[in-house]
Amino acid sequence: MSDNYGPEMQNKLNMEYAIPRPLRLPVSPEEWQLRARACLAPGTYDYLAGAAGSEDAKIRDEEAFRQWRIVPRFLQDVAKRDLSVKVLGVTFPAPVLLAPIGRQALFHPEAEAASARAAASLGVPFILGTESSRSIEEVAAVMGDAVRWFQLYPPKSFEVAESFIRRAEASGYSAIVITVDRPLEGWQEPDLRNAYFPIMFPHAVTNFITDPVFMAGIPKRYYADHSYILNEVFRIFYNPAFTWRGLSRLRNITRLPILLKGILHPVDAEQALAAGADGIVVSNHSGRQLDGTISALEALPSVCERIRGRIPVLMDSGIRRGADVMKALALGASAVLVGRLYVYALSVAGEVGVTRVVSDLIAELDISMANAGICSVSGLNSSLLVRST
Image (cartoon, rainbow, N blue to C red):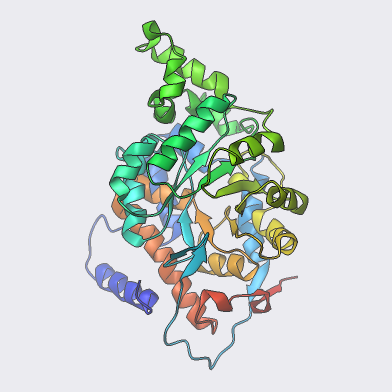
């Protein structure tokens, strides 16, 4: 990635928009969301954009960024910027990862294959979800040597969880992200209103129907019975009894780094470290699971203070712009994950859309850092920010 990436992307967009075209790609996150709403079925859009209960937590996630203001420093040499970060011993060209978003065939026919290719082309890690529409192996095949992680919702069956991890290991995934903030599906009123229950869609169970351990438990006479298989997935998928003890069992079966996604409380962060976690993702699931939670950005400083740099702390929920990324990094995050934003773009323009929205986010980060007097990610810290009143 060029050390003048932002201005180069800006010039490219200026030239593109100087030529009138009826189907030009959006620039702002708001435009991507509006275009996604126009091209998706209402129930699908509501599922993607919605959150739990009153959606207070989702709203809070975005408002939290506006409560921190940037205090730029000028007359600094920012002619060259370095956006690279090192996470789990690997250097990435920018502090951005693609978050695990399941069932991507609902949004585009190429599903996770398109998103994964986009991530690979930019050199940013792609995190494949348990509920993906393309299998662990299919996504690995389209990514080549690019960095990929696998996200796991621990099912009730330890044997199936172990099989997923073994498949990820064999397919070149370099970390396991265990999501811990969804013992049960959140109370999502749009999905209830629309009778839209995505876990029961074939789009969500590809990793199960391609798993030898899971399929070994299905009587052969039911192999072609999708309803039976979907019910069996549903029977084991949610695991409200998963605890720190279960995490220890998973920790003991793999040498891959394990990150816990969904941590908000500093005590849980400390316990994650004690349990052998190699990283934490501070997240409230973008408000999808629990109404009224603290925002991820609000939780970030106390978690980072408790961890004190012993393991990387990443953050997601509410990231939409380059300034948001700056603020998260200044408050202690090692890198950020983006989710809904890239799926809006996937819905509109497939792989091209994902590539564009992520590259635009990185370009905006580059320009924002320069205009704040910062030439490297390592120079971002809390002295750059003040809390607004």
